[in-house]
Length: 400
Image 1 (spheres, one colour):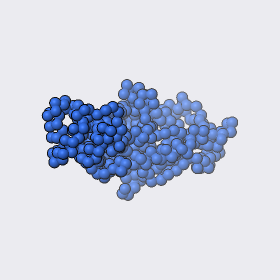
Image 2 (cartoon, rainbow, N blue to C red; image 1 turned 90 degrees about the horizontal axis):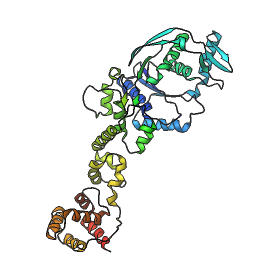
Image 3 (cartoon, helix red, strand yellow; image 1 turned 135 degrees about the horizontal axis):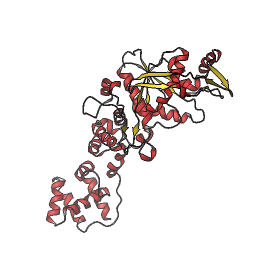
Image 4 (cartoon, rainbow, N blue to C red; image 1 turned 60 degrees about the vertical axis):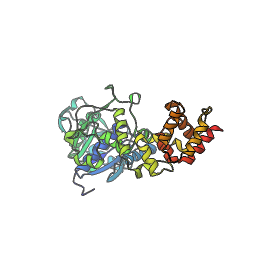
């Protein structure tokens, strides 16, 4: 990993749901920018919403990050830091900059104009005259989002906050808190939204998917990581397939786009197929039940996702049949058995020509007799893998 520099980035998921594609994009961007600059990366679980946060969602997020290959240097959980938030809030109460109301601690908003230089969007101006006082500590003792965010970013030395543009409206409140505490704020960068193919807001109804769902549908983590890394970030070349190490080496904030990006599932499918092709046989065979390197080599060109594997290896199962074999089939089995020195393509074509059998009918019947299916891997690869004796045994089974 190399020596960690003075900069610190953070991943700050809320464990109130599964990790969707927008969360994952923010995490991938922060990870790549931190790794590119040799910075520390902190994972902070923001579980202050006690009603919606669950240990199950937290574990799902952690599992998703690990599946994507995202590592972190330090780990924190906000629900374990309540004393810190309360102590700092007490300072503001004592200074008259916060007050108690209905058991909660509220911050007095100062009317002012705030300017920040966003690392993605440039200059942004905020007018706090439009803002009301807001909660620092809720009546149940847990911190409000803005307060926990600012206290933790300060305490943890966060220097760069890269997050979605839907957080822009939060920035002015947080900057007011930095100012009143006398703390140096981090550098903010707000990345664009991810939209559906029709340019509408991405949602479950128009194609949004969680990382758990992508994993369960057989996508490879490397392909998903690569795909997400290009949602709103432009490489210097026209290439689109980048191993993680290559992405780390060239990632920089100046190539992050201000424009919204499109979640194109067909693009992800294409990219995943490319990653499937690039799996070594030793990597692929681990996904195949009782697989062999020969079998992995056979099926690799046919795979779009890992879920295609069961269909591709169905020919290994004992076939079941419907209907009866053609009248000529018994004679063909004998012909196939006797001419064991002749290559199957030549033998089958020769038998079809000699006996006036349409070649499509011939091949379909032989395939069905061997596998119990009329589709699948190339017939001659199947014959070669199973061996002639096994193929003959299966074809005879269809007759009886």
